[in-house]
Length: 352
Ligand SMILES: [Mn+2]
Picture: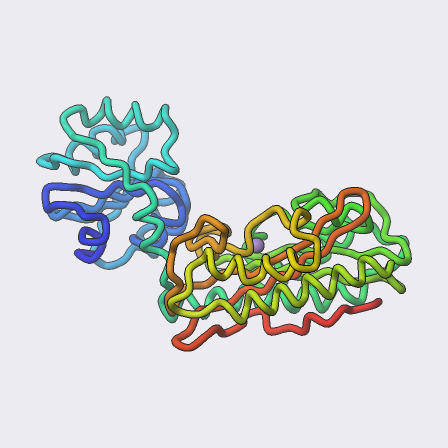
C-alpha cells in the first residue's frame, strides 16, 4: 500500500479516502459499493452501514478493520477519530458530489482536501493475474451468450427480446448483472451508437448490432458484434468489411510502448481512407476492469502508453444516420509482445 502513497505522491501525514465502488473494491477488497475506505499511516478502515457489515468483514483485506456506522455510531464521529492528526486527505474528486464534499469538509475542518484526479484510477490500469482471469471469464460468458442468441435472431423478433435473452443467459452463467445497459439495435437503428433496445422488429436484410457485457465477481466484460439477417444491402456489407479491417488494424497496433492515441489513429486511418471518417465519431476503445469505462482510453487525445497487464476494448464503428451502422468490438489484454484477445471469436460477417 506504500506504493499507493508513492503513486499518489502523498506524504506520511496524508490519508486516502475512497468512496467509489471500484476503488473501494480494488484497494480494500470490500465489494458492497457503498461506504468509506480510509487509508492512513496509522490504520486502514472500512466504514459501512449495517447492510454491509457482514460482507465487508468477509471481504476486507487482512490489514483493514471494519466499522459499522448508523443510528448509534455517527459516521462523522468515526471519520473525525480515524482522521485525527492528518494534515491532508486525498479524495476522489471525480466521484464525490459537491454536497458530499462540503459535508466531509464540515466534519474534518482542519484537514486540507486534495483531489486525486486521475491518479487513483491510473493505479487500476494494470491488472493482476487474478483480475485478468475474472475479466476473461466475464468476457467468455458474453461470448457464450452471443452464441446462444444467434439461434434466436430472425425476422419478426424484437430488439428487446434479444436483449433479454442475452441478459438472462449471462445471469444463468454466473454473471451478477450486466456491465452496462445492453444494446441491441436493428436496421437503420444500428446508426445510434448507444441506442436503447425496444419493440422494433428485425426484418430480413437488416443488420443487428449487439453491444453487451456482464459483471463477474465485480469485473466487467464488453463486446460488440453486428450480424446480418438475410442478404444485406451492398453498401452496408462494404461498411462491415471496412470496420472489420479497421478493427484488425487496431488490434495489430495495440502493444506495449504504443500510445492510446497511436492505436486509435491506426484504426481510424482505415475508416478515413475508405471515405467514412466522419461516420466514426467515438474513440477506438477504453480500459475495462472493475468499471466498464476506465483508463487507459484509446482516443485521439490519449497520451497513455500501453503496458502489459492493461485490458482495453477495440471497437471501431461506422454509423450512417437513417441508413444503418456497424461496430465490432473485442476485449484484449496487452501482453509483453502484443495482445491476448479475450473475446477470441471470428469477425467474419455472419448471415443468419
Ligand atoms: Mn466498449
